[in-house]
Amino acid sequence: MQGERLGLVGGLAADRPVLVAIVLAFGCAALAAIGVNDAREAGVGSGDLADLLTAFLVLPVLPLALASVAPRKTSWRLAFAAAIALLLLALDAAAPSLPFDWFAPDRALLAAAFVLTLILVLIAPVCGAYLRLSFMGGLAAVLGAAGAAGLLRFEGVPLDQIGVATGLGVALGVVVAIGVIADHAALFARGADQRRAAGLAARQGAAFALFAILVAAAAFPLRAAVSPLGGELLDLVWAAGAATALSVVCALLITAGALSLHRPTEALAVAENARTQAQRRFWRPLRKILPVRSAMAAVAIVGIVLVVASFELVLAPTWREAAFVGVAAGAAALAFFSLRAGLFVLAALVAASVLSMWVSAGLNMATPAPPMNSAALTLAVIVFGQLGLAWRDARSPRLNARETMEMAMTDGMGRFVVGLSAGSAALYATGVSGAAPQGAAAAGYALCLGLVGALLAPPLMTALSGLTGRDQF
Image (cartoon, rainbow, N blue to C red):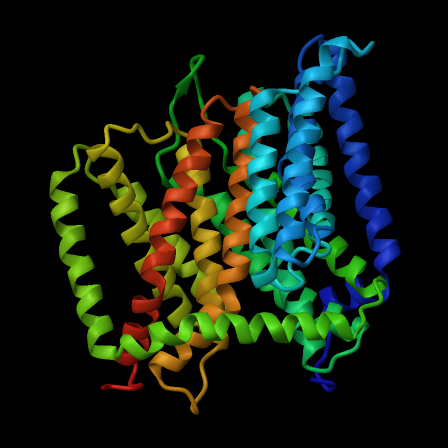
C-alpha cells in the first residue's frame, strides 16, 4: 500500500485539496451566475432554479449532515430522531407567522427529510464511517449541479430537462462520494495515513466516476426517452452527461480533499473494524446455508420467473432498452477492468428491471414516464456497480465462492444502502420542487429496483463465482 502511486486524480485530491476546491467552486459559481442572470433577463426560471437547488440542500444534504452527528447508542439515536421530528413540526407550524414571505417549507419535503434522516440514523452503526463526512459529498454534488443548471439554462434548456439532468447528477455524485468515504475508511484502517488514504480513495473512485458519467450520458437516448415535447425532441444526452460530469467530479475531488485535510484518529479505524466484523457476522449464516449448487438453483428459478414475467408484460422490452443494458454492462467491464463485474451488473439489471415492471403491473402501479424512468434505472445501475466492484475486489485464490460473496456483501452493502437512499432522495427532491413532476415516482421506482437487486445479489455472486471454477460443492 505504501508503494502505490496516487495517480493524477489522487495527487490532486491529496496534495492540492484547497486549490482544487477553490477552482471547482469558482467555476461552478460562475456558471450558475451566468445562467441565473440569463434567466432573470428573460423573465423566467431564476426562482425555479433556486427552488430546485434549495430542495437538493434539504434532500439529501440535510439528512446526511444530521446523521453524521447522531449519537452512537441506540436509545440516544432514537431520541435524536424524535428531536428532529419535533423540530421539523415546529418549523412547519411556525412558518406562516414568520415575517419572511419567501420562507414556506414544503411539508412533503420536510417529511421526506425526516424519513431519510431516520433511516440513516438507524443504519449508522453498520455503516461505520460512511456518514461522517458524507454531507461534504452532497454539498459538492449540489455545487456541481448549480453550475450545470446555470450552463443548461444559458443554453436554453427547459426547466424540466434541467431538473432531470441535475437530479440525476446529484444522485450519482452522492453515490460516488459515499464510495470515496468508504474506501478512505478501509484504507486508513489498514494502515495508510490520512493523505495516502484520501489519495488512493480518490484514485479508486475515479473509475467509478467514469462509469457513472458513461451510463448517465447513454441512459436517455438508449432507453427511448425521446418523446415529443412542444414540437421538439426531448434529447437529454448532453444535458445529463454535462450535469453528471460536473456533480460527480466535484463530489469526487472535494470529498477526497476534505478527507485529506481532516485528521482521523484511531477511532476511525476502530469503527471501521467493528463495522466489518458486524457485517461478517450478519452475512455468515447466509454463507453457510447457500452453497454453490443452491445458489445456482435459486438463480435458475429466478430465470424461470423472468421468462414468465416477460410474457405477461404488456409492454415488451424494445431494442433500445436491450442496448442500454448492454452498454451499462460494457461500461462496468470497461471502467472496472473486470468482465465479472460487467456480467454481475448485466444480470442484476435485467432481473431487477423485469421483476419491478412485473410487480408494478400486478399491483396496478404505473412506472414513471420518460425521462424519469431512465433516471431511476441509471441510479439502480450505478448502485449495482458498487456491488459488482466490491465483488471484484473480494476475489482471492484463498476464498471460495461463498466466502467471496460474504466479503463482497460485507464491503458493498453498507455503501449500497446509503447511496441508494440518498440518491433516491435527490430524485424525489426534483419532483417536490416542481422541476420534474415524475420525481417522486422515479424515487420509488429506483428503490424498488435496488431492493430486488439487493435480494438477488448474494445468490447471484455465489453462482457466478461457482461458474468461474470456484467452490463447486
